[in-house]
Image (cartoon, rainbow, N blue to C red):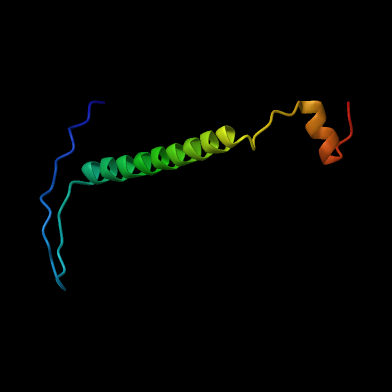
Length: 77
């Protein structure tokens, strides 16, 4: 089902005021989904940057499945 493009709402500087905005429910859902997707993307980007920094610093090392199991004290197959 095609969705309508999200509309940009003007921003206002409000001090100690309450404002209500009426938004169609489907547009509200699209806005919520877009915000969730943006948050996931930002968290993924932060994790990737952290991983790359640790890799460049030499603190990440590959360990085989068998070695990881041995280090964790898991029984081997």
